[in-house]
Amino acid sequence: MRSWHGKLFFFAGFVCVLMLTSWHTSKSDNLPSQLHLVYERLLRAEQRGEVLSQELLKVLGQLQNRSIAPSNLTISNSSALLEERVLRRLLPSQPNAHIYLPHLKEHEGSLKPIVHLGQRRTGVSLVLGVPTVHRQKQSYLVNTLQSLLYDLSTAERKDIVIVVFVAETNATFVNAVVQTVQTNLPDAVRSGVIEVISPSPHYYPDFSNLKETFGDPKERVRWRTKQNLDYSFLMLYAQSKGTYYVQLEDDIVAKQGFFQSMKKYIAQVLSEEWLFLEFSQLGFIGKLFRTSDLPMIVEFFLMFHKDKPIDWLLDHILWVKVCNPEKDLKHCNNEKARLKRAYKPSLFQHVGLHSSLPGKIQNLKDKDFGNQVLFKGHYNPPAELSSSLEKYLSHTLERAYNGDDFFWGLTPKRGDYILITFTTPQAVKGYFFRSGNIETNGDRFYNTTVEVLPNNNSVKEKVTKGELACCKTSSDGFVQIGSFKNGVAEGEVDGALGEIVAIRLLVHSDSDVWVLLSEIFIKV
Image 1: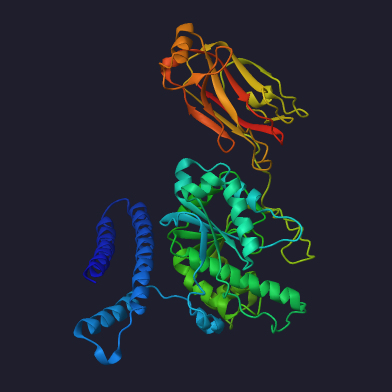
Image 2 (image 1 turned 180 degrees about the vertical axis):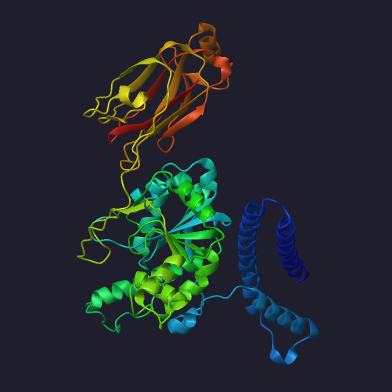
C-alpha cells in the first residue's frame, strides 16, 4: 500500500509544480504563450493521472476478491479497507452503468471488453473509436482503417491508437473480423496502432420490450438503442488510453493529413471552453472529446439510451449545459455553438451506401469535405522514364515523376518494371515511393523491390562479393536496396554506392489489382 501513496503524492506534487510554474510565468512578458504551455502540461498530467487510476482500480479489484471474514477483521485488514475507501474518493468517477443497465449485475465483468488484438497502448494524443457490426451487403472496415493509416508518419503512428469495437456477440462473426484485420493490417496490429475488442456476451439487455417512439418501427428503435450502447461501451474503454477521443464509423474515408490538421486545431482552442470539436458535419462522425469528459457523456447516453438517437442526445447535453428556458431559441443556439466548434473543411467523409440497419440505404455526404488530394508532387532530377506497365488513360509515369498527377498502370505481372534513368549520374541520398492513394488504397505495389545501378563497376563487384552490407545483387548490374512495405518504399542510399545511373522498381510476382504511384521523390 505504501507504493500507492508514493505514486499519489508524486502526482499531486507534480500538479503543484505546474501550478507554481503558472504563477511564476505570470510575471513574464510572454504570458499567453506560457499559460498555453502550462495548460497543455496540465492536460497531460491529468491523462497520466487517469492511467494511474486505472492501475489502482485493478489492484482494488484484486482486494475485493479477497475473502475477509467480518468477525475476524484485524487491524491491518481494517487499515486496508480504510485505504481502499480513501483511494476510491481520489479516483475519477465512473458512469453508474448498473443503474441504467441493471441486468449487468447478474454477470460480473460484463462491462469488461474482450481484447482480441493489440498491445493495450496508452498515453497517446488521439484515440480513434471505430465500431463495426455485421452488414448484410458489404463491409467497409478494412478500407476505413487503411484510409486512417494512409499517410501517418512514424511519429504520428506512435501517438495514436485506433480501437475497432466489434459490436456483436456472435463468436463466428467476431473471429472473422479479427482475422480480417490481422491479415490485412498485420504491422499496425503488431505495433499497437490498431486494437480489436468486443463486448461481453452479457453486455446487451433484452431489446424485445422497447417502446416505439417518433414513429419508428420496432426494428429501428432496437437498432438505434443498441447503437447508443455500442458507443457507450467504446467510450468507456477508450477513456484511459489517451488525451482526446474521436468518434468515427466503419464506413468513412479520412482526408490526407487529418492527424496534423486535428492537432493544430486543438492547439488553437486548447484553453477555450468547449465540449466537443466537429471534424465532420454528419451525425456522430468525427466528433472529438476530451477523454476526461467521457464519463459524464457516457452517463448521459446510458440514462436515455432507449429514448433517442445518439446525435440527438449529444445535442441535449449542450441544451442542459447552456440553454436558458427563459430565453429564445436564437440565444440557445448561440450558447450551444460555444461548446461545439466546427472545423472546416471536414476531415472525414461517409462512403457507405448500405446501413447496418437492414434494408436502409443512406446517401449521406458531407458537403464540407471537398476533394481529396490524390497525389503529392516533388522536384526530381532530370531523367528518362520507361515502364513495361500499361498506363491507364492520361495517368502517365512522366506526369507522376514531374509532380503533375499520379501514375496508374494495369495489373502488374512478374518481371514488370519502372525504370528511371538519370540524364547524368546522380549522388542520390534517398528515395520515397508511395503506391495507392486515399481513394484507391488497394492499388499498391506488392512484392516489389527498389534497385539502383551504380556508375562505378568496382562498386558492383563489391556488392557481388558481399563487401557492402547495404544491399545485395539483382540482375543486369543493378543492386537491391529496398522494397515496398504496406504500399510504401523509402530509405537512404548508402554513400558507398557512389553516383547512381538509374533506379528501378522490379515486380517479383503477379498481382491481382492495378497499381498506382501517387508519390515519387528522389532526394539528391
